[in-house]
Length: 113
Image (tube, rainbow, N blue to C red; front, side, top):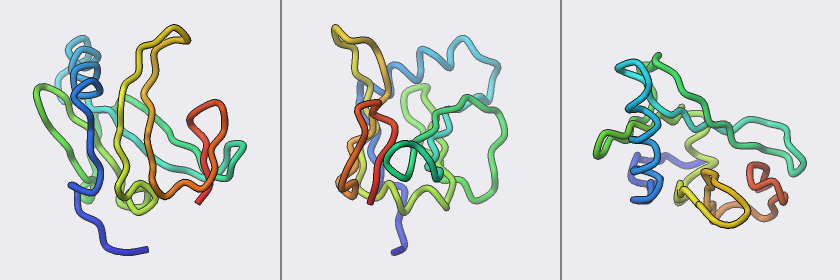
């Protein structure tokens, strides 16, 4: 894996707005943690969790009342990705458009590289 910087992951305006709305109802210091772990139908899966604990080596993206945390192990798998929020006829969800993914599952949270 190569070195990555926080700007290698982008959070869309729609996602920022939705994250800020969610966090407004949570205790102060709460953030959305986005992570990658092994598993899922395609090999890797994204995780989305609300938490108040930040690790010293977390990548922190803060904007307009929204805070996103990404751990340094997950970050290389997300290089160049856009975290988005989609609200359509099928439902609402956070989605990650990952240019490194060679395959993904219909569930939208599982991918392979």
